Length: 308
Ligand SMILES: Nc1nc2c(ncn2[C@@H]2O[C@H](COP(=O)(O)OP(=O)(O)OP(=O)(O)O)[C@@H](O)[C@H]2O)c(=O)[nH]1
Ligand code: SF4
Ligand code: SF4
Image 1 (cartoon, helix red, strand yellow):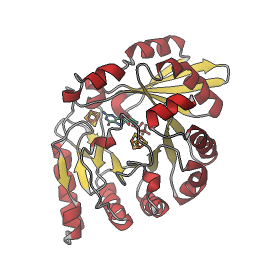
Image 2: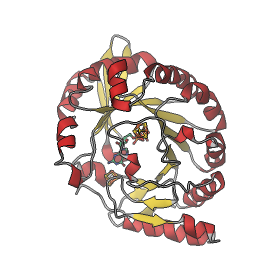
Image 3: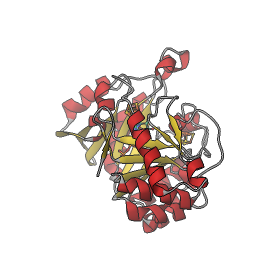
């Protein structure tokens, strides 16, 4: 069974934010669309129950996000509890704790990991993330490659900061056996005119044209219809994926994700701010699985493509 929204989009992925806390201070952080500060995090039992119910409604993939998911001391327990219900369990992390956690996370059931790596230059890395941890993160990536597959590197490309490093990063991905994701800076409609956005927004369309030229092969993913390019380098073939969401109607028309906030609400879109549906209160007030499933279905019906 799979649920479809009013726009014919199947909902097969759940992105669960485990916490709003983070040990980094990236200046462009979108906080997975949670534009408020909350504590009241879901417990491992509640997360497991949610995933169990969602898996019966067609959810096959779960992505754990934050904040930074590894700051939760019960992260291994959470992974262990939810893996039995999903085919693909992944996490997006800043990589700061991967050196010690990659192996136990894999053992607990994590299939793969995406690591934010916006620069290979210590000064630029620090300027972007607010912390001097490039070395630690690189060590974490090295460790992750041993136990998790694939390891993807997330590079948000920003004008005046790291746009000159794109091809270094392509080489680095080939060298380390990772997949590079080039991400265009994102913002909701009302923010696109701000001085901040105009200062840092670096369009990836021209980069895609260059990738197309250099690629041995190009593929398209079902999710967001994202393009994948296979680029020859001195270190072998690099796999490069482009995440270009801004004003991209095709991207939204192929969005199969429902988000869950760290305080137990469904959130239908990263960029909307009027789309929260609380299920945790119902869960804590003794709602049955069937009642939680109804709240899930209501959230699916609220989904709308953001750019259309
Ligand atoms: N607008 C929008 N942006 C997204 C969406 N999913 C991911 N992104 C962007 O892509 C960045 C990286 O996402 P990740 O959390 O690594 O996950 P992913 O690459 O989407 O997922 P996988 O390819 O399945 O691992 C996010 O920080 C967002 O900027 C989405 O559904 N909508
Ligand atoms: S590491 Fe991720 S969650 Fe933490 S501040 Fe940076 S972008 Fe935000
Ligand atoms: S509808 Fe578009 S902007 Fe919203 S989460 Fe999906 S892909 Fe992202």
